[in-house]
Image 1 (spheres, rainbow, N blue to C red):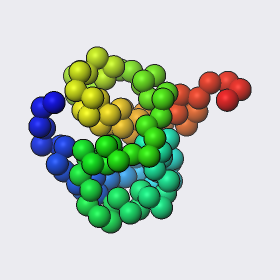
Image 2 (image 1 turned 45 degrees about the vertical axis):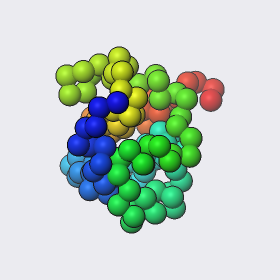
Image 3 (image 1 turned 30 degrees about the horizontal axis):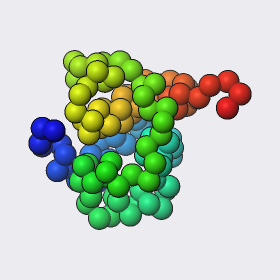
Length: 120
C-alpha cells in the first residue's frame, strides 16, 4: 500500500470541507452524517468522538465498526480514476466516501446515495 499524504491527515480536518461542499448545494450536515454512518458503521456519538480526537483517515477506516457491504455498489470516476478499479483498498474506501459526498452535493436522493433497493 502506498503511503499517501491523505492517510495521515486527520479526518476532522477534512470533515468541514465536506460540510461546506454539501451546504453550498442546499444539503444538511445531518445528511452527511447519515452517509458517513451508512458507509462506516460509526454511530453519531462515535463519529463525534473521532472528530474530537483528530484520528487520521487510515485509523478512521481501519477502526470503522462495520464497512457497509453495499459500498462496492459505488461506481464512477473520482479524481480521474474509476473508484471500483482502485487496487489500494484504503484509497478506495476514502474515494467511496468522496463519491458519496459528491452525490449528496449534486442533489441525488438519499435512497440512491445509500444504494437502497426497493423493499429494503
